[in-house]
Amino acid sequence: MKHSEYSAVIVGSGAAGLFAALKLSSQITLPDGILIVTKSTIGESNSKYAQGGIVGVLHQNKEDNVESHIEDTLRAGAGLSDKKVVKYISELSDTVINDLITYGVKFDKDKFGNLNFTLEAAHSHRRILHSGGDATGKGIVDALCKKVEEDSNITVLENTMAVELLINSNNETKGLIIYNSLTGEHEIVYSSAVILATGGVGQVYKYTTNPEGATGDGLDLAYNAGAIIQDMEFIQFHPTALALTPKSKERFLISEAVRGEGAKLIDSSGKEFMSKYHDKRELAPRDIVTRAIYSEMKKSHTTNMFLNASVIDKNKLAERFPTISKKCSVNGIDISSSPIPVAPAAHYTMGGIKATVEGKTSISGLYAIGEAASTGLHGANRLASNSLLECVVCAYELADYLSFANLETPKIIDNAIMQTIGIYSKPLTDIEYNIPELKQKLKDLMWNKAGIIRNERDLKSAISEIETMKANFKRERKCANIQEYEYRNMLTAAQLITESALNRTESVGAHSREDFKNSIQNEAKHSNIKKCNNTEIVEYVG
Ligand code: FAD
Ligand code: SIN
Image (tube, rainbow, N blue to C red; front, side):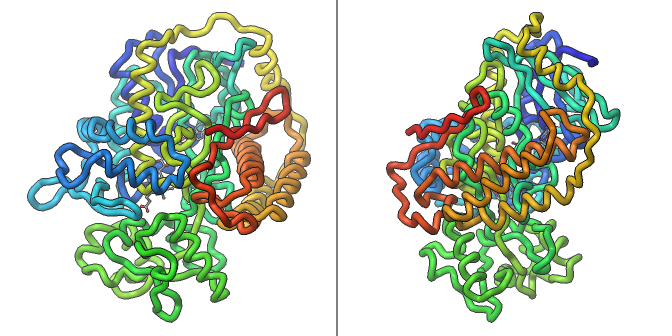
């Protein structure tokens, strides 16, 4: 197998991966350079589709402050956010937003040239910065991609997937195996710092706002290497995704910011219903709005509710939400006059690879940042627009941490590493799988049995079906193509979600058990799962 060496390897080119690469490059002299491997083209990621914005607790915004943002984040996190982490990330918001601006991100301004702050659900202040109206992710990713492409310390390998970590007998990360989907070749990359910035797992569900690549790859890699995985039962379902027809699987996001600007949720007869569920109505925490819509859909035997945006001034709608207006318009909906059909969809993974704010995981040399990581910021439920903030703050902190680390490329290849390389050197058995069909079966199963409202019977049945699906997919670890690898990784993500959801016998935040209604929020503990010699260790930690 071909091999190469880099001082640091970043997997993924969303906001977290790109920002980490730029910060590493600007802070440290790395003799062997930085490699970004990315499954698709550079910048293709969840980040690129972010709409609402990024939290900016800026010193210049006198109406807002860090304490208020901490309170809002902790309230949304339903007792499972780590206050120290929340404070740390909130305090760095001003610094990283200014960095983004320096890198060329153009946040929207008012006619006087001042930054425009908007409101989103469960925020006490207007503190969300946006770009291109509702194209914040594109604004950030495009600017960062341009900088990465100009940086001679950074090499980018597109259409290349990380498929396995190389961990030595001392439990230290020494590199990874990558798969180039254009050549069909596997290669070895040696490095003492591997950074997983691989995003979330939305594609595990039938309905999701996430693009195709969100298949939980980093999660599988880390779990298989024995890293601690935290809080996988906490999947955030966004309340308002465009539900064009009952059968259409695409769920384009209708940003919470539309409700922030005044849009109302209505049923098919035009009646508002949110006041029955929460005093903040449309701006209640996301899990509450999701369950309210879900409950109205169940009661009325319909497949969607509606969002009435016609209450917002027509010019403002067009200016603030150009992407959403256009998407609806090409599908025959003029949002300034017609209600938008909406339904919930899997949106964000609060759990993930347990990591510190600097991205350190339970394995030496392995780092996780962004949505792939679980730092304790989001707890049981993420506050809107906190995710992009977490991506950039943790990337920033990681670069700072690594500037003091020894990033010499590894010279000793021991038996444990040779064994892993051996698996990827062997030819594959000649079996063909209908992966689109298998993926769809898994997505349907997860939606129906481990979705918005859960119970023991369904979760047990889902776990047993996932076990069967794993047994029927006869690949040791090496697979034949990206589709197969994604299916392998989705099975791991599905297993971790369902097992964690079954183990948590309480309803808290986004995890709702109809057989355990009472939340015991103040006593909730994080669920940790780790693989050890092919058995699983599950524990709960405060
Ligand atoms: P991603 O941006 O998902 O990037 C992951 C990268 O890893 C991709 O490039 C992917 O191709 C690559 N990758 C994955 N696996 C592999 C592999 N095995 N090998 C190589 N490459 C791999 N959050 C907010 O804060 N504000 C918002 O307004 C907002 N709006 C959103 C709107 C939508 C439609 C969606 C889907 C999410 C939104 N979120 C928002 C959430 C937020 O966008 C994400 O949580 C965040 O962007 C994640 O960034 P990331 O860099 O961690 O991962
Ligand atoms: C949205 O724009 O509604 C998404 C914001 C987020 O997920 O943080």
